[in-house]
Length: 241
Image (cartoon, rainbow, N blue to C red; front, side, top):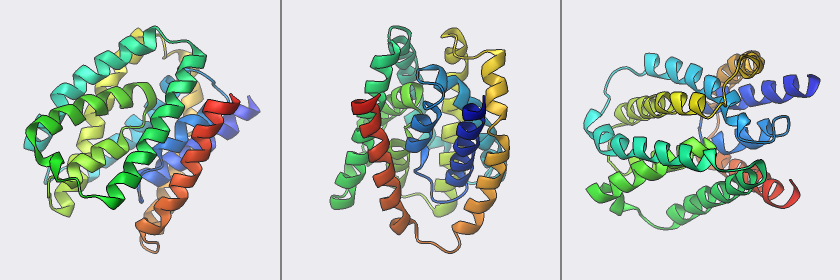
């Protein structure tokens, strides 16, 4: 129980910090929770935290939403969620851990690639549909679709206000899609919801720290720390679990 309390506090801290500051730290949260819950059940423990921060975000950013962009991205996002649910239903804990490590490494590699080359192909309709499917799938099985979704939105040439609002609503809608799937997979229970509440103090503290942190640190500098920590987490999952 003590381990679960500490792990969930840290998970809440990182989730709150990421949502209200530079973002990109979602790759770290699931491996941390898996210290106490080493399997797909970690997904069910985390989803309530994401929904709480999503509600806070969509309330804060309820204007300037580009529904036309979301309309291209989300339909196949739902298909990706359905395919991800099918994968999870036939996967044991060891397979899940390996898949998660591979996804994290892939997301980090994508970040490096896009640092070096432009991604104007993201403006093509077929790419929007493909990224929607991939985003739904990765979100369902690993809660790690942030880099994909952010990449897609950045290349739509939205205003800063529209980008933030559209991103917040996109994550909210995808997480709502996932909710009944996780119930069907048996990843939710009274116990898992109780464990999720352990993260609430960290969630609040992390959000406050993140809000003030963003005013003083350049996101470009902080992203390298995130990448290093995420890579270590992925290596731990794939080699030492």
